[in-house]
Amino acid sequence: MTAGRLLPLAAATTKPPKSYPPPPSSREGTPTTVAVPDSVVPSTVPAEPQGELAVLDAALGEDGTLALEPALELFAAGYAPVPLITAAPQPLVDGGPALRTILGGLDELGEDQLAAVLRVLDQPGLAVDEATVNGSPLLQAAAAQVITALGAFFEALDRSLPDGVAITLVELPYDNGDGTYNFSDPGSFATALPFTETPEVAYEECRIRVNTTAQEAIELTIDGPRVAAGGVTATAELSATAYRFAVPGDVLVVTSGPADRGALRFVDGVELPLAEATQAYCLKPDGCA
Image (cartoon, rainbow, N blue to C red):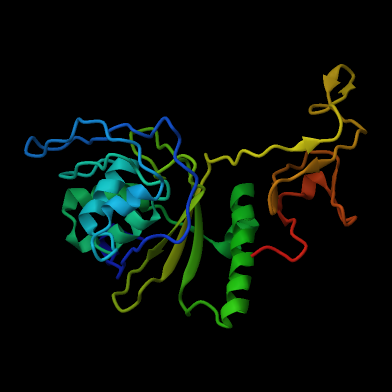
């Protein structure tokens, strides 16, 4: 995908139907500004922390849609500075609404503004089928969930995606290390974005950006203490001890390598060598959507 061939999308963002995890307290309540010309004076008054949906609500117009300028302000708050734009007081937890609005108005951006946006968004993705085979363990797990979701979509609506629509995956860190970010919040797991190069087509690619930095904090309940083998704990040496753990969720994502020893055994008796167990496992008896 090249910047010169990117075409705007017909995008209108309304209030999201679900909530998301609250942003870290370290980012709440901090006024965010960007370097702009003297004619634009950023606010220096600290803003009161807003709820996770209040940030988006405050940016919506009377018709419930997100216009380009407030979307750029949210982009500047969470992703990167944008010339002539003052950052919003607080970034979105899920930056998708702002990104999709901006992608729908690329032809309205100045040259420097377009460059600032594409510097964050213009990373090509890997096709789902290729990610399943050649992707990292994280992309393989993400691809497996995408395939499961597509199956549920096809079954529920009795139709598939339009011909020519590709689904791709790309893994990115939260922090680029240069003052720009690939996600609006460090806890954001993924963002799906539509891209097109044909004005007659709404979108030709759904690119799913996966955050390599985000870690879901869960507690595993182990039914026994770790044991020592030759003076080294069982996490480093071979041990015959069996461990039982409870997963507080619907999906268990296992990442392992060829050198890992042992097996993963489920309550239904299915057992896999740990070295071959890298994938996402649905733990719900009726399946995962």
